[in-house]
Structures are given as C-alpha cells and as structure tokens.
Image (cartoon, rainbow, N blue to C red; front, side):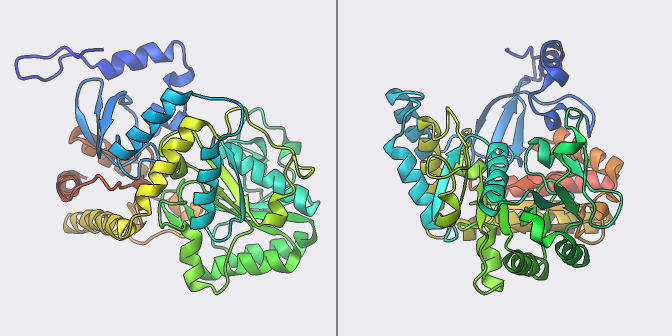
Length: 442
C-alpha cells in the first residue's frame, strides 16, 4: 500500500489502521502473535513495510528506532550485508530438502564451539518446539514426570508450560489457557522466581520425582529480571543432588547477552557451573525460524534415532535458515563485538534513567549485552509479583509518547528490549531526548 500524503509529505490516511481493520476480518485479533495487537497499551499496531539497520518504516512511511528487533534475533540490525548475502546465496540452491545438509553440521559445530555445556545439539524451527522437546528429553532421560518452572518465565506455548502458580506454596499449577486440560499440567510445579525457600521445599517434597528444573536465567517476559547468583547456584546443587536436569531456556539470552549466553555469565561466579540442557533460539536464526536444544552427549543420545525419545520436524535445519544463522554467529564472534554492544546498551539505559530522575519519575533499569529492561519502580524487581506492581497506565502513556516521537519499544509492560550493533550514538541520543519529553508530561 502507498500512503496518501499532503504537500508536506505527511500521510493523510492511517494505512496502519486500514491494514489492521482488514486483518481483523480474517486473522484472529488481526495478528499472528497476540502481543502485536497492542491490546495491552491500546491504539493501532504499526504494520512494518521495510526495515534497515536500527530502523523500520510503517505503512504510513514513518520511521521508528526499533528496540524490539524481532524480539531479539536482529542483533546485527536489519539487513546486515553479510547475512543478506548468505541468505541470497542459499536461496538460489533451494528452499528446503527434507534431507540433511552440510550447513546443518556447520551450524551445530558453531553452537557447540561457543557454548561449552553443549556436546550435541538438535536443530528445530521455533523456541516453543525446542523447549517442549527439552522437557520431553529430560523426562525420557530421567524416567520422571514432574518438573519445575518459575512464575513469570515464558517457555513457549506448549500445553504443559501454559500454567500459573497453584494456590499454596510449592503446589502444582493450573492451566492459563483454554484448551489445556488440568491433567496436562498436573506434573508442572510453579515456583516464585528467586525464592530459595520455595525451591528447597519443592525439592524436599518432590525431589525424587523431578525430571528437571526449567528456568530463564534472565527472564525476558516479565521485562528484565535476573536470577540471583545464590539462587542459580542452589538450582544447580539441588538438581545434582536429586538427579534432576537443569534446563536453561536461552531462547532470548543465548548469543544476545554474551557470546556464550547467560550461562557463561553465571559460570564466572559459580565454579564449574553448567546446565544439563540448553534451549536456544532467536539469534541463532538471525531472524529466520530456527531454534535448537542441546546438552551433554549422554543426554542427547536419548533422542531418536539413537534413543527412545522421539522428536522430528520437516523443516528442522532448513538450509536458508541455517545460512542466516551461521552468518549471524560469524559476525557476532568478531573480537570486541559484545563489548561495544554492551556499552551502547548501557548508554541507553543510563540515559533513560537520568532522564526519568530529572523529571521525578520512579525508574529502575538493567541490561546485559544487547538486552535491557526498565520498570517504573524505584527498585529492580526480583519476581513476577513485584513486576506486577509497576504502573501500567503510566507505562502506556510512555509507550505512546515514544511511539509518537518515532521510538518503538515493546507494546507491553512485561517485555524486555533489545539494542543491535546498528544502533548509533545518535539513535540513542534521540531516544533519550524523546523519553525526557514524555517523562516531563507523566
């Protein structure tokens, strides 16, 4: 669609609204993933027409500084020349074969080289698929059914993971989605993030029955909340003690917060630390549908065709997606890449905090590598319940104020943000200046 413009070049018709109205008649809610619908913040979703570097343009040809980056994968920015070249060359060779390729081996080797805890890896097509498969593998490897997850951590929309905390301490969860029978989540134990007392009680009650603990080391779906080092250390100790597997969901953090993922950060503080299974996604596909799960050889060899745990996928290891992922990993492996990325991300976070402080707005923020989050709270929360005390209406005003000024952050209070290597100092300065204008009116 081409926007109608007046003599100043401004659009006279909101083509985003036209597209949204059209979409709602044929796609549930007008979107193919719920958060895109702007239900949490109100207003009309921006329909992206193109993107380049740190920016995208909507249907009205308005440019935005992009801090979601496809929810994390675009760590190099949009349209990086090396990645585009790799994808274009792969496309000329064929879209999909349903048969193995050498590039799958190359990508698997790259992942193993960068993540020491992974000795073997299986490629899949989505983070949900990888997380679901990791739980099945943990159950198959241990012969146990129960597992622990934490409130506020999102591991995809597999039935057993769509669960909220039970009514009491260390109780099993209840479904959070229609279509998920209670018996499907009866083995899912939901605990409070960073709560050592609950963790220890859960293992005391159910340790012999637990297949695994699944955790986001930095939770990105309650904005940005880190697992404390003592909490992570105890997770590892208890899993080892009771014969359960520690599953790290690094779909969001893998190759985003550090070259070795979040687990490499914890390994600096906990001698010998490593998860048993890692779930990866987003960055390893460079924007293409690609994810993976991997771990110790003895665990991974439980997978078919070697072992009894079945997992399969027609498009797993897709040749175009693997080309995109390989090119991305090659670029982010360059010396100094993450130092520069982390510096720019910290520059953004510090600038936003200074602007909020100058305007008397309660504000706390954190970042690691190219991932960041902020809260309209005086202190960083440590769990989902505290995150929920953040000022939703004020955040919505901040979101729309930034959007009006050409800055696109996540359209929900509970989502982390992402900086890419393409974000310039000028992009960050513009963002901070826009934020200060909005903070002054909050």
